[in-house]
Length: 459
Image 1 (tube, rainbow, N blue to C red):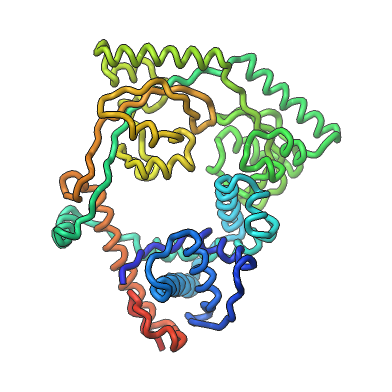
Image 2 (cartoon, one colour; image 1 turned 45 degrees about the horizontal axis):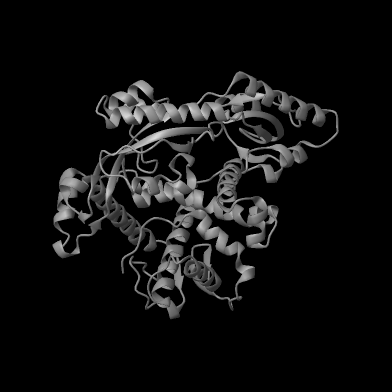
């Protein structure tokens, strides 16, 4: 039975638990015991229901449940090892991770209200139920990091891995694109910035005068969709999470104190410190952004329209035009749009569609690229930068690989990642065999004829 060695992402573990009250309840029993940790029938069934709802699980019900059970066994064995190795995480670290992940899911779902509605629980209840799952995963990650710390693949191993794949089993690789861009970022006028700062000063004054609370004003006026509905609350975070200018102010506030207006790449903020815990702080903020004037956007569009014509007429190369006209940092590497997941320049349409969900600069990119020929320059396209500013850009497909069967020459990086994945899976297998022989592991008889990938040495 093939399986993925990677531990299932935290929220795909925790959120199904939160949704239990919306599913038929399972008659529960203990399915497995690993040291002090147990796996319940309901743990398996709730994940099974959630996976089926999300279309993630392929295979028969028995096969899917067997994979879920083995994932759970692996997680519990790692927790058992973390206890034996005295691995620990602090409450502050757990709070920081939990708040970051919940903020991410709030941004994906749309709002705190929608998240609470989806799971039928308040945010406080969600955090209470997720907290232990976060802590467990952080411990598992530390154990996994120790297992993987020396796992690498050499070029020879990559070649041997590829040659071992039967030719008729080599997968088809979807088309991939190298994309270059020229970006015009119209500046925000000084007058617009001054008006936004003045609005924030007025909001700050109303809070200080007792006319309204900081949380209420954040709900009414903040332009940060991820925190506005939570009264501007950001959750506990350590240094390195926020913009430097924001951080320098936030970490120097006293409890309840409200900052002056702070400018970052994202706009203008006022910040209130709610609580400090060790090296972490929990703040509220109100964000207002200065908008680019319509006239400036029209000017940028017209400029890029002229640049596009120069490139099409052969009067200038795209690369030279990028160096001369682009306002984006990408001009320093030829205008290449980087794959935020891999760090490389190649993107498939599927990569783009996934990135469009999380990064504003990728929005609608797959639609545009799929309609361009290699070397064809797009018309000026409106875009939103990762700092949420309006801009325009030209896009050109520099290179494209056609759909093809995987080969070492064209797909070395991809095949290297496959070879590394297999070697990591083998490392996990050796670790499981070694640790399972020493740990107390008991499995319900009804599950012992499952087709498990690892040797669990059940008692």
